[in-house]
Length: 186
Image (cartoon, rainbow, N blue to C red):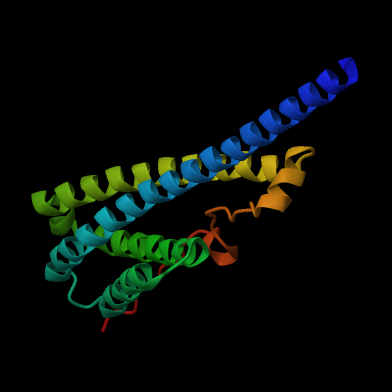
């Protein structure tokens, strides 16, 4: 009788541990999905702001055609990107294009003094800060999830139940390098 009670007690403890481990994986996965949604919201805000910014700068910088083309290409790539890796690559491309756009603005003092441009620049700066925070939260959530999927004993449950390593949102190779801008006036 005592041996049976011990076996039942051990079984209950194992089942509780399995349930708690499964629930923690689901919680972490949902946190990652939420963090990605927060990044996506900010990326969409930035996406919507860019045409206004480009049009404002275009009025002053008519000879900087390649910069505007790069911003437009990067913006299109952002909207067609499907997964985290593609979005990260497109985001990095867009960030570089925007840096070039602001470098162009430096050459036009009247543009820098334009209130509409200042407002758009401040709005974009705020969005960029939110994107940076959302990326950090996303990557922190991925770190916690990946650690749990790769450490014993929870890695056993992760493997059995199909919880796999997630990708970080990160810059790649040349996106980490400083942006070099050179303009040939037409």
